[in-house]
Amino acid sequence: MVKIGIIGGSGLDNPEILENSRDVDVSTPYGKPSSSLKIGKIKGVDVVVIARHGREHTIPPTHVNFRANIDALKHQGCTHIIATTAVGSLREEIGRGHLVILDQFIDFTRHRTITFHDSFEPHKPIHAPMANPFSDDLRNLLIQTCRELKIFCHEKGTVVTIEGPRFSTKAESKMFRIWGADVINMSVAPEAALANEAEIPYAAIAMSTDYDCWKDDEEPVTWDAILEIFGKNVAKVTDLMLNAIPKIK
Image 1 (cartoon, one colour):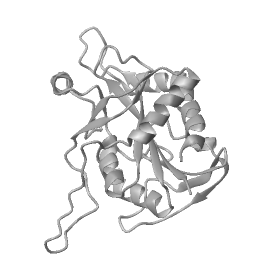
Image 2 (image 1 turned 135 degrees about the horizontal axis):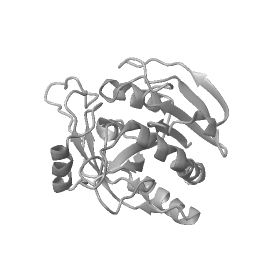
Image 3 (image 1 turned 90 degrees about the horizontal axis):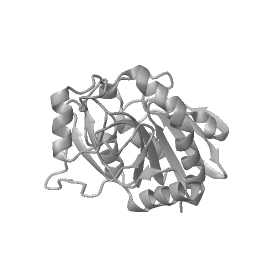
């Protein structure tokens, strides 16, 4: 039976998309998740929503309990995870408000617990494959749904995840472009890796809100500017999820 976990990022964690919703507080072996679980349905499909940074956005990126979030969804029986995330664009062609269906990540974080495995059993190391960290089936479904809804999206993109909560320096931003990153955020790593360890297919819908700080003819990113783009474009993400989720098998 399909049950979808949604991990909502900054400004993209509206639990009102659920029908007949209720709140459930849970604990995990890794501590408490970022928020209570909002459990309900989308067009008949069971859905569980977690607000990545807490319902009132009180949790900085470094202190998000990624392990607890993924473990909570796994123990709720979630068969798939769709994450939403705000990103800065590192490419001219990825404009403000554009959606990107991510296909790769670069982990540039420094202080996060990146695995469920604090130790191995004797002679039984666990090294999760991570060549393709995002589910192709989920990605293709999201891309096809964008086409049906006539929502423009970039059908692939590499995200570099930084530690935060500060934004990049200009030197860092230009370096990430050289590395091949297309967008930048503070959340996909280690979230995607942990979902893979938990063997839950994972996809991420990224919304570009700014050009970080690499462009010499643009003002560097600010939080107020990000919020402005959210307000103008968040409906696209909501429409995409409402129409894609019922098709997941």
